[in-house]
Length: 214
Image (cartoon, rainbow, N blue to C red; front, side):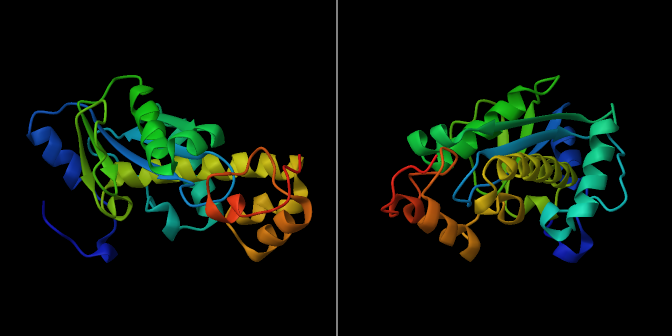
């Protein structure tokens, strides 16, 4: 596959190559929430129709929250776009480890699509034992349009989930930090302990001496 500079933005070369190889349904897959100390990990799978175009569609990390919301709404409203968002819970993260839980969420998203893809292009490193045909693409969210779309659906979905948790547990600042280990978040853990939504297998949480706070 031809390497391009990140400045060109994502396109559909990877999807077109897969179709040229005989694949008919090509899904891009990405995740959000692998690094935080709290909350689930969320994955999305997206199949874009040939010739698809949505101005501004890019890697979610390159976009403002407002722009992500706008693109999320456009993708969700477009019936020609096949999509599925799935997650792995905090309990699954602690039981399986974050990498395996992320792969589980990705598999759930791919298998939840209206039509099972015959090729999945997964952002990042290769996923062993993935239940569907797949290939990986490092920095795929900046290179592959369907992965960029998946990155937006996963990110916005997870941010909304963390906003819900913030209303339940406002002292941790989940709406602002998305569960990452910011200073505010760590100070709240020290003061109030941890919640059932914290990943106890993650070292900063596991090292807290205070008992479960909620």
